[in-house]
Length: 104
Image (cartoon, rainbow, N blue to C red; front, side, top):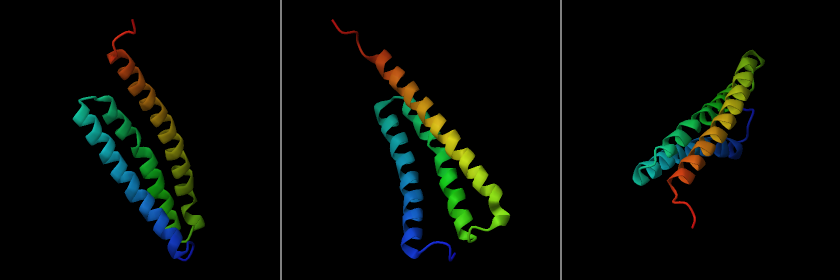
């Protein structure tokens, strides 16, 4: 655990917890509005959470070269998460545009 300073650990852990809260908040918001597209957005946030947890795990073991595969996994999760978030946001936009009445 010597790879990161205590304040840096605090930021890493707080970011992971904050992302978890954001996932729950997005899902709750969608449920209250009865718009299922928000659930897809919350689900699309999951790979980014996994990516952050992988990064924290790698740092926990002092950035060990034996865990280099974890870094590759983390990068893949980041890519997947970014693509999933873009797709979910586009899906949500299209759903909301379809629900709007046409302009006069």
